[in-house]
Image (spheres, one colour):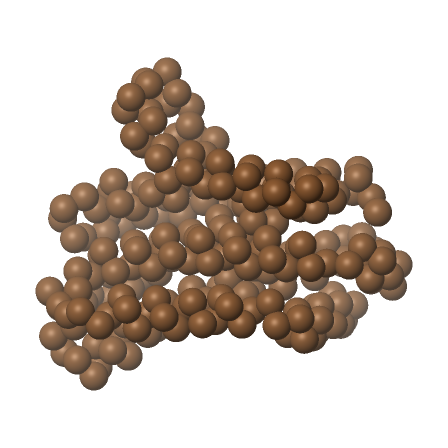
Length: 241
């Protein structure tokens, strides 16, 4: 654990010095200010849109960080880590901790605004809205990180190809339900494509999160993210430096 902690701190210092998080931080601020400037706001809609925004933001963050990675520097980190497991765990922790922190900001901010503006939402904000809406936001952030880092520069040598692949998969995830509705034989997409927009279909026009449906979406998200991480690490081990 000490080795993982040291690697984590070192990686975080490198990322902070690279200023790669400046644009995402500004984007997050602008989104929150714009999102809650026009009141009242639909409770479920605010959380769902925040989740979609976080997906885009985290995909950008993961992509930007991995493209700034220096292969020589990474090889040195790998050599100094006590095992490959420690090396990859520290790498994943950096990305997903950034995602979680961003998600918490998106979850906490509306509650702060609600304390200042009691009429912020069309209806009273319930604890279930925060819990289940929060799960959607966190889950979408994890998906964004997983996909943004999947198209790694050691896997896709040309950045253009990596960005095009990321864009293609993102569009499929966003349009999944429309595609399945048009082509029923592609219903398999429900399982192999991340549940990025499932929350919107679940809520519909009710403005209420379904507890069972939300838990199902979150479990699907975790399975997808874990699978992507394992596949990516396997390919990176094979490609080496």
